[in-house]
View 1 (cartoon, rainbow, N blue to C red):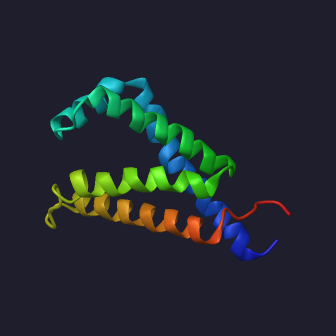
View 2 (view 1 turned 120 degrees about the horizontal axis):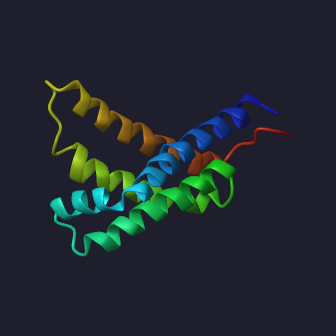
Length: 126
């Protein structure tokens, strides 16, 4: 096993957890994400809330276990770019370090997804 393969696997697993854990959290309280989407002006917010949380769980889990990775990155990429444009950027304030970190985490996630898509899922074991 080479270092590149191990690095890609660790990135893929981290990204899987990055989506799976918040998705499971949203599953415990779907009303919270529905309210947020409603506040952002989404039509049929309950529908989009379920699409969001199921996508995070299914595709995050797919990344975590390393199955269908090249397919799974795209819905997650759309989720992150949407969140960055509709939530992180409008709330960005350079005097508020938390808002800056939120945007940076979105950018790191996007870069990680692109990297996994471009170079593959890697392997933990040979």
